[in-house]
Every structure is written in structure tokens, then in C-alpha cells.
Image (cartoon, rainbow, N blue to C red; front, side, top):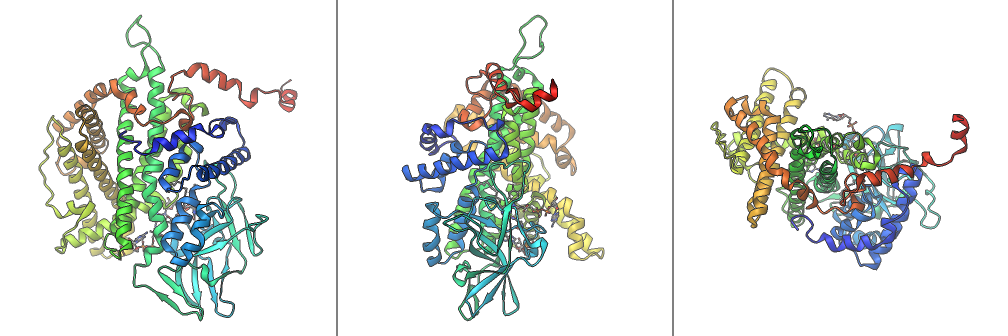
Length: 621
Ligand SMILES: CCCCCCCCCCCCCC(=O)SCCNC(=O)CCNC(=O)[C@H](O)C(C)(C)COP(=O)(O)OP(=O)(O)OC[C@H]1O[C@@H](n2cnc3c(N)ncnc32)[C@H](O)[C@@H]1OP(=O)(O)O
Ligand SMILES: Cc1cc2nc3c(=O)[nH]c(=O)nc-3n(C[C@H](O)[C@H](O)[C@H](O)COP(=O)(O)OP(=O)(O)OC[C@H]3O[C@@H](n4cnc5c(N)ncnc54)[C@H](O)[C@@H]3O)c2cc1C
């Protein structure tokens, strides 16, 4: 119950749907078959939403977890970006016009921003939307090869609508990037409309079930009413008006998805991988621990525990951080709706930083889980390759991770600069207003408070040093931009240290809030392990200014090792607590019943290469 909350009823409903549990094995399908299979599931999912009255985004998400296990659903961009952007950036009339159709899936949309030549640098996008007051239309055009839209999910074959980000031109003047609602395909024939050249961009590392696409505009007209006009308007005569609000509001869809990715992608992906690797390590026996004794479960090897338990602790930490990130998003977004925009920069910084920090950690962790499963981890039957390729996409989409860390660092530098000028920081950065203590309070007890304080010290010091280095670079004659670039490695490390502290702090607060003493003790062990591993892996950061000494580092190592034995008896229960159904895991190694070998054998016999096939037979004969 620590995890699922309201999710169980919707998962159970979805599990009753035969279509979601049955069908050919995903691993044996070609990309086209995977895509078709996914479309059949999408259609069934849409029918289920109507049948069970599923309207709420969270309810649908639980249902989707079973309907599209370990795949990214092509509905993701529709429900995660198209609808939220309509709601957040549309006027009341525009919301009334498009949102009900979109929610009933009568129109299917995506978010069309990235181009062949630019993804990261949004201000460098080239697609134009030129207003023509005579026809009261915007003319969308792709003026160059590099301006062709590239990557949007569902654009290739599925979607008939999209929100296109394009540069608004009126009377030759460039008003910057704006969102436009564009019908892409006929609602009758599903053919692309004249003036549009579009298709799928081809096979990828993962995301087989998503038709990421391209789109080239050839002077394509859309009605004036199709520019999303909540914050900016273009009147019939071409007059441009805008509310005196932050121009970065048009980046709102990205903040939303980044905030969700921490839980939905990093948290879920790593928790699934840990479930598979730890369950498997409990049934797999190998070698001898003691002569002439039965082979031990591989989970009894300390080295195996050392590989997996820190990842288990990380999975819990990322999960809790993801839940907190969602709460913060909805809280600040509500404030923004009431006109209070003060916390937008902090929301942008923390969502960018955590999206980058957690997807990188999860991606690395999932691969470690796969390696920990030995040979069978390399088989698709483990389910781990599929989890990895989908989760690691999160390091790139919605803002490449290095770039996101630099956005977080930019905010930290602003705040630290403000503190130097006497301003008091608040929220996630309030610690930057405190005096950095040089005294380390870590003792062999390793209280969660003392551990969190160590991460606070590290983050504050690294932010201070990044800021001072930036100033030094400028003082020695570099201009601000070059100074930033020459300091950017240091800046990303400072942003990571900030996010790391935030994650430890969230975990600590969850442990403190648990009432059941037994659960609290077990979670405390995990939280300690997370923090101690963080200290050991980054020990240079903690000893550089003499905060930790060698004796304390030795204590850290000792406690880490003793925690491995303490966590061992609960390890399998701790992954069972995530409550992933076998259907969601899609893994023979991670089966709940532990019946791995029999099912691996059955699975291998079904592989298409074992079927009679003329050409192969002839070539081999
Ligand atoms: C629900 C679904 C969940 C699960 C989904 C799973 C499936 C997913 C399927 C996959 C789906 C994948 C879908 C996809 O992938 S959709 C495509 C996603 N694309 C990106 O994410 C592009 C990344 N690039 C950018 O966002 C911008 O270009 C950046 C941010 C890098 C620079 O931008 P720019 O050059 O314009 O800015 P600046 O650096 O000069 O800074 C100027 C000022 O602006 C502030 N600033 C910047 N940005 C924001 C902001 N957002 N809110 C508030 N403020 C912001 C900034 O702090 C600075 O403030 P100050 O320092 O001056 O005070
Ligand atoms: C699976 C997937 C799904 C996607 N779905 C969508 C979608 O639905 N809609 C959509 O519009 N887009 C989508 N995208 C595109 C995605 O948002 C972009 O690929 C992403 O924002 C990264 O931009 P880029 O490709 O331009 O990377 P680049 O910016 O070219 O990154 C390449 C390298 O350059 C570095 N770099 C770039 N700029 C800087 C800088 N300022 N400072 C330091 N280093 C820098 C990066 O760190 C990276 O190492 C998707 C991408 C993927 C992989």
C-alpha cells in the first residue's frame, strides 16, 4: 500500500481484459507486427476507457500499465502532451472545441516541436507560421531541409492532429515560438492533407510501438483560430497582443512531461528491473560457498548484494522523489493559474534537474540489473533489454540530460548570486541561505539527518565553488558565455549534487512519516544504504574540503557492508512490494512463481527460428 494507493482497482480491471494478457510474444514479433499489435491494444484501450468511464489521467495511467506493458504507448504524446498543451495554452473556446474530442479519442494528437536540425535549442527552430490578414490564415512552411519536423511520437502513421511549435511572423516581424493546432490527416480517409509530406522516421533503439515521424509543410494554411491563444492573441487585422506574463509559458508542456518522467519512466523502469534481478537472484543457484554444501542462491553472495541492494534503495528513492515531483508540479501549476508565477523558475529547475538525474541513474541501474543476471540477463526473455531501451530514451527526449542539468545549474547560480547580495532563498534551495557547516556530524549511528546533512554540505560547497569559478573566469577576461562553457562540467556536477541531496531528503522525509515501526526500520536501512553508497561513489566530493576524513570513510564502508546482510532477508519482499504483475514485467526471470527454467525452455522452443523455414533449411542443408 506504500506504493499503489488508488491504482489497484484499475490494474485489476485491465488484467481481466483477455486481449491485454494474450496474443503472440512481443519478443518474437517484427517491428511492423509490434506496431500493429500495439494499435489493436490502443483501440481496445479506448473501448475500455468508454466502458469503464475512465476519464481521469491517473486512472488511465494505471490501466495503461497493463494494456501496454513495458512499451511506450502511442497514446503517450496524445494524453501526455497534446491534451495538456490544449488545456494549458488554449483559450476557453479553444478548450471547449478540441479537448472533449481529444479526450474521447475522436481526434488523436501529438506534440510537434523538434526538427531535423534542432531539438535542444528551441529558439533555433525554423518552421514559420506567417499570418495573412486577407485570408485570416496562418501559412505554415518548412523553409529549409533542417526545418523538417522530426521525432514527434505518433506523427508517422497514427495521429490526425498535432500541436506544432512554429515561429510566428506578422508583417515581416518575428514574434518567436508559438503553438498552433494543426489537422494533419483527413478524418475520413486518414490520408495526409495536401501540402503536408509526412511519414515514419524508421527503426530506433527502442520505442518500436511508436511511429515517431517527420513532417514537411509546403505553404499549408490553417485558420487564425488555430493558434493557441490563452497567453498571446493575433486579431483578425493582424494585431498581436500578449498578456504581460512570462514568455516561457509556451514551454509548459515540457515542464509537465519532465515532472512526470521522474516517476513514470525512471521510477517505474528501475523498480521493474530490480524486481526481475532480485527475484531471479533468489532462485538462481551457482557455484559453491562452502565445499560439499548445496549451491547457494546467488543473492547470498555479498558481491551480488552489493550490486543489487543499492539499486533497490535507489529505486525506492527515485519512486518517492517522482511522487514528490508530481505533487510539486500540480501545486505550482495551480499557483500559476491563480496568477502567482514566482515559483516557475524553481519548478523549471527542479523538474529539469530531477528528470536528468533520475533517468541517468535509472538507465545505468537497469543495465547493472541486467549484468547481475548473467547469461540469462542477455536474453530477451529476461525482459530487461526492453525495459532498458525504453527507459534510456528518457535521457534524451524532453530535453537532453546534460542540457537539463545546465538549466538547473543556471537557476542555482542565480540563487547563489542573490544570496551573495542579501536575498533569502526558499523552497528546494533554502539551504543555500544557510552557513555551510564545516563540521561533519556523521557517527557510526548514521542517522538519516546526519546523512542528509552531508549531502547538503556537498551540494552547497559545489554550488559555491561553481559560482566562484564562473566569477574567476569572467574576471580573467572571458566573456559571460565563454566563462559558462569553460565552467560547464563543474556546473553539471553542482546540479547533480543538488538533485542528489534533494532525493536523499525526500527519502528521509518519507521514512520519518511512516508510522509502522517495522516498515520504518526497513526503509531506514534502505535510505541509509542509498546515502552511504552515494558518499562512497562520490567520496572525492566529501573529502575534498576535509568534511569527511579517512576514518569516517572507513566507517561508511563498514556500515554499507553490514547493511547488505541486514537487508538480505527482506530483499524479495521489498521488490514484491512494488506489486508489479507478471504481465507488466514481461520477464521469465522475474516471474512471481519463480518457475524460471521450465518457462525458459518452453519459450525457446517457440522462437520463430525453430519453425520450419524453406530458405534457411536450403542454405543449411
Ligand atoms: C504524462 C506522460 C508521462 C510519461 C511520458 C513517457 C513517454 C514519453 C514519450 C516521449 C515524449 C517526448 C516528447 C519530446 O521530447 S517534446 C520536445 C522536447 N524538447 C525539449 O525538451 C527541448 C529542450 N530545450 C529547451 O527546453 C530550451 O531550448 C532550453 C531550456 C534548453 C533553453 O531555452 P531558452 O534558450 O529559451 O532559454 P535560455 O537558456 O536562454 O534561458 C532563458 C531563461 O528562460 C528560463 N527557462 C528556460 N526554459 C524554461 C521553462 N521551461 N520554464 C521556465 N523558464 C524557463 C531559463 O531558466 C532562463 O531564466 P533566467 O536564468 O534568465 O532567469
Ligand atoms: C524516443 C524519443 C521520442 C521523442 N519524442 C518527441 C516528440 O514527441 N516530440 C518532439 O518534438 N520531439 C521528440 N523527441 C526529440 C527530443 O526531444 C530531442 O531529441 C531532444 O530534445 C534532444 O535534442 P537533440 O536531438 O537536438 O540533441 P542535441 O542537442 O543535438 O544533443 C547532442 C549532444 O549535444 C549536447 N548539447 C546540445 N546543446 C548543448 C548545450 N547548450 N550545452 C552543452 N551541450 C549541448 C548534448 O548534451 C548532447 O550530448 C524525441 C526523441 C526521442 C529520442
